Length: 248
Image (tube, rainbow, N blue to C red; front, side, top):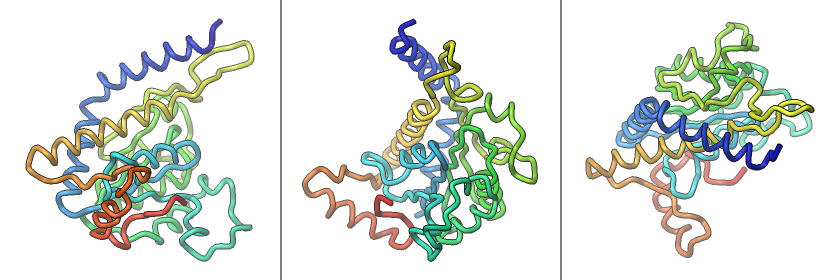
């Protein structure tokens, strides 16, 4: 079995299925984000484990929207006063983590949230979703319905991310994420690839809608283009204290 070509074929198939099957949810998510940007809001993104890569696609991305902010498990150390040596590698499973992280960010009524989680069942993920909805803010979930539907949530409520979100985008990853079967077990995870495409389609929809009504979309230029720092910093200044501008 040629695993390289088998994975390439599987990835193409799932990407095609995502574009066709998830397009209505993606367009709804893009419209929600455009509404937030028009109102002066910020789109906050949260993901743990490999889903942090999805949050990185949303926030602080070249070609993406400037009014975006990434929330991470490291925030109590990086942005707060927590002792680095006390950081728990299993913090994503603890609902209390969501409270600690969210408390370090400025959240306004015009904001929106994107939460990415393949399983959709870790304690901090579900609790973050619950906190977002308690504040009456719109929530977009990017998750695997196949995986989430097959698990028991680690959150005391028993809820999973897809049950709390206003808009759910299924990343089409299977239970366990890996898509190829071998004699040594399933290999080659797909969720980061499909979720990244979902984010970029969502952003494209939002930017297209902003342009259609004459709104100039505040978009990041790559930091590796001369003059981009000055341009990006000037636009980011509109959201001072509300968005993360560093790499950590």
